Length: 64
Image (tube, rainbow, N blue to C red; front, side):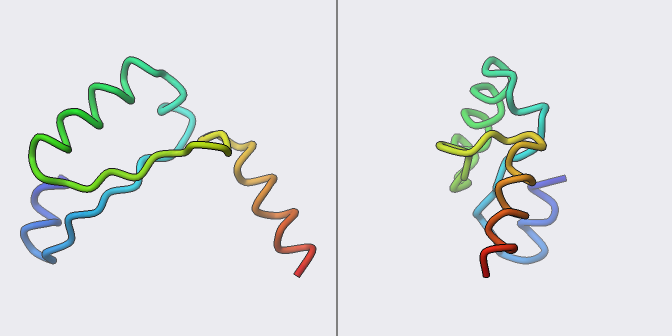
């Protein structure tokens, strides 16, 4: 799916998010596969990829 969309749009940057990417083994496999295919992969570093990130985002919006 990512490759097809990239072919149609020219976009080579992919963001991986959601609770499924808390699974480190899966995350590493997907990142490795995408990078081998030439994609720039963005992953969470300081905010959890699950609903905890949503909570932080909502708090930031409330501050604004």
